[in-house]
Length: 439
Image (tube, rainbow, N blue to C red):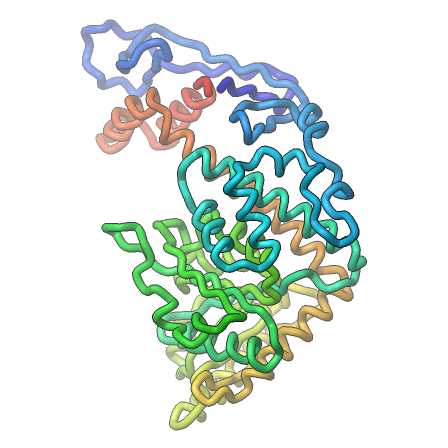
C-alpha cells in the first residue's frame, strides 16, 4: 500500500545520514536505512522527499489503500438512504455491503438489542487484527450514520439516544458498589437499559482484565436490562483503550439508555474519560482534611458532579464534613461550563440513600446542557478529539510494525542511552525514516 502525503502543496526534503565507510563502527549519531535491503548499514548521504497535495489523506477500509478526500465522498451513502419509514434499510448503504456476511448478521442483531451479537462486536473492535479493524471501522461508521439520522429527527434540543456517564475516583471509594446500586435503581425503578464499561487493570501475563467487574457487580450483571463489560486497559495510558469510544457507539446502537464508563481511577484516566462522556462524576469516600489535600486539583476541576459515597453509620459525620469541604472548594473555583456549577452530594450504596438524588441531579444537568446546546457542541468536539487519538495510535502502530525501522530503532536507542545523540535528534531521525517508508 503506497502512502501518499497530501496535506500541503509543497515538497518536504529530509536529510538523513552521514558519510561513513562500511568498515567503521556504528558510533555516529546519524543513521540512514535503505529500503531495498534487509540489513541496516551506514551509507552515504541520503535525501528523502515526500510531495504533498491539497486534498488530504483518506483510507479505503476495504482495500487498505489511500485515496483523496474528494474521491471518497462519492463512495459514502447519503444519510437519507439509511432509514426508510423508521426501519433500518441497509440495501443502499455502500459501507454495509463491504461487511462480511457474519458481521452483517451481527450489526442486524444489535439493532434488535441482542446481547450476544453486541458482545461479539465488542470483541471484534477490541481485536488487533487488521482485517477485524477494517470491519470494525465500517460497522462504527454505519451505526454513527444511523444515530445522526435519529438525532436529526428529534430536533436540535431533543435528547440524545443515550446518556453517557463517566465515573472515576480513588481506590476504596466504592465505585463498583455504587455503580451496581445506581444501575439497579435505573433498571428496576425507571425501567432503563444500562450498559457498564468497566476498564480494569490488565494482567502482565495474559493482558486480560484482573478484577473482572462481573464478579464485583453480581446482581447488575444478571439483570436482563443491564450489560456489564469488563475490559482490560492493556497498558494504555489512563486505562482508557482506543476501543472504549467505539464500544459506547455499539451500546447505543443496541438500545441502551444509559452508558456508564468506570475507569481505573488513576493518572490520566480521568482526562480520557471526560473527553468521551456527557457528564463526569467523581466518587470519593468520606475523608478528613489531610486526605482531601491528597486529591489532585485537576480531577476536581474537571468534575461536573462530586458524590461522597459511604455516607452511613459511623462514617456519616465524616461524609458531611467532606461534602462541606468540596462545596467550599467549588465556590472559589472557576466552573468549566458557563451553564452549570458543579454540585456535591452524599449517598450510601449499601442503604441506597440518595441514589435517586444522584440520578435526578444528572438528569437536571443533561436537560440544562441540551437546552443551551452545549451538550451537542461537546459531543461534536469529542468526536474530533478522538479522531486525533486514533491518528496517533495508528501512526504508532505502523511505526512499530515497520521492519526497516525495527532494525534502526534499537541502534538509536542504544546511542541515546550512551549519550552519543540527544533523544530529540533520534526521534527526528526515526520520524524522517518513517515518512519515507512506503505502505
